Structure formats: C-alpha cells, structure tokens
Amino acid sequence: MYDLGRSLRERYGFLLPEHGMYTRDSTLVLSSASERCVLTAQSLLAAFYEPPKDAIDIPIRWQPVTVNVLKPEDDIVLGQRRSCPRLNQIRDELMVNPPPEFEQWLREGIAMKDYVSASIGLALPTMRHLFEICDALEVYHEHGFELPAWAGKIFPDQVSEFIRGYQLTLSGTEELKRIRGGAILKDLVAKMRVCQNGTLNQSLLFYSGHDVTQTNLFNAMGAEQLLKGRPGYGATTVFELHETLGSDMEVRMVHYANTDQRDPVSVDIPNCGKPCSLVNFERSVSGMLLEDYDRQCSR
Image (cartoon, rainbow, N blue to C red; front, side):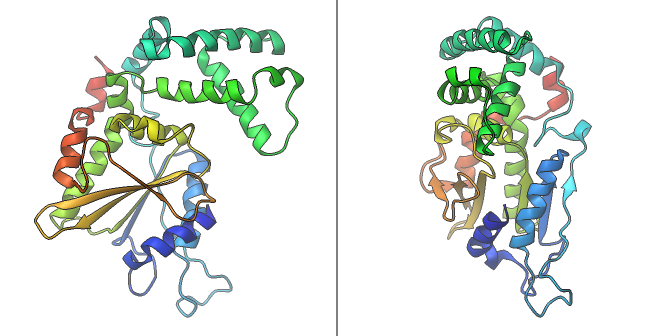
C-alpha cells in the first residue's frame, strides 16, 4: 500500500496544500472499523503525505494523518455492519430460488460444499462457510503455504470461480445492489454536488474498505464485468471530478487492480457517455441511490 500511495502522490500531488502538510480542511479519510482497513489507510497515507524534507524536524519523513473510523453500528457505506434483516431475507431467497445467471454457480457451489465438508470432516452449513474456506485457501496460497491435499481437486480454478460468484450474489438482484452499493453511491454523488457548488473544503477524499465494498460499488453502477474477477489486494478505484468550460463538471473513473500497478486503467462509466458529465453520472445511477438504509432494510 505504501508503493500505491507513492503512485497516487505522483498523479494527485498537485491537490496537496502548498506546504505539503496534512490538514483536515484539505483531506478527509474514512475507514471501515476492521483493523486491516485502518492499517491500509495508514500505510497508503504515509507515502501519499510524505512531508517535504525541511517541513518537519523528526528522524523519519512521516506525518500523522487522521483516519476517521466508522462505528460498525453506523457503517452503511464501507463495511456495512449495520443490521439489515431485509438483506438476509433476500440472500436466503436467492439461495433457494436463484435467478438464471446464478443457477449454475449455486449447483456447483453445493457440490463443492459437500466435497469440502466430507474432506475436512465437518459439515459446512451455508455458502458463507464455504466462502470462508475458499478465501483461506487463496490467502494461504498467496503467502506460500502448502495447501491440504484435498484442495488440489478444486484449487485454483473452482475456488476462484466460487469466490467471484459469491461476491456477485451479495448484490445479485436490483434490491441487493441498492442496499449494498447504493449508500456509497449516494455519498459520492452528494460530495460531488457540494464540491461543484463550492461548499466542500476538502479536495481529497479517501475511503478504506473491503474487496466486497468495491464489488458492490461496481455492481450497483452496472460495471460488474469491468472487475474481471475478485479485486486484488489494495485494488483502488478513483473518481476524479474535473472542471469544464460550462457550469457542469466531468466525472472520470480510473482503477488500480492491485498495489503493484503504477499507472491506473481508465474506466468507461456505464450509461453515462464520454465525457461523463456530473448531471449524466447522477442520472445513470439514480435508480441505485439508497435514500433510507433503515427503511429499506426493514421492508
């Protein structure tokens, strides 16, 4: 994440205050309460906000940057830990009567769940439990640990496909997309609007969430195919707001697939046109904006 912070500094350093020091008037950082998300934000910001050599009299070139951690019970944007009974109800219904695009995934997932249960000698009650096993296998492999012999039958292809499908089911219907991705979309649109009218002081906004945060965002935008699989470690999506000759502004979107990617890939925002004006961007996502999380979750 430190290297990615440097890459972002090269691209967006012009937005920093002239003195190069962090101020809460110039930057807002929000993080999920998960420790790894806070550490991710701190690591990236250590590089992004590396102070000038003569700006601070300490042995290391580092400065503290405030990371605002969302309380789990209040978080409907990043970690989405706030209770939502309707979310669980829809997910349960989807697993019993899946839409056509998930039928094969569910069939293969049930077979894999039975195989893994038999292999480890412990019955896995739900797809969530299978996801946690598959997630652990990927993490072990990426860190060079030897996988159990039984994993050879399903790893890596079947495991990867299951994880990708599972994350898609988290926002696999229109209502799920709105609940899962609508809150962060609404927050982004609202901040773009106040930036346009000149009432937002900060020029830099950082959100440190989870891979599923990004998946839900892309799904809600109708851009799920652009991820091409599960988001990599440190995958970062940037929304840029550019001034234009007229009264409107232009929205641009770029994506870093992982922490090793120095230059981002430009993303065409679905149903927005090019250039994508702020008016058209808001119109393209208007059906997904979540107006009242608690009301939607108690239906």
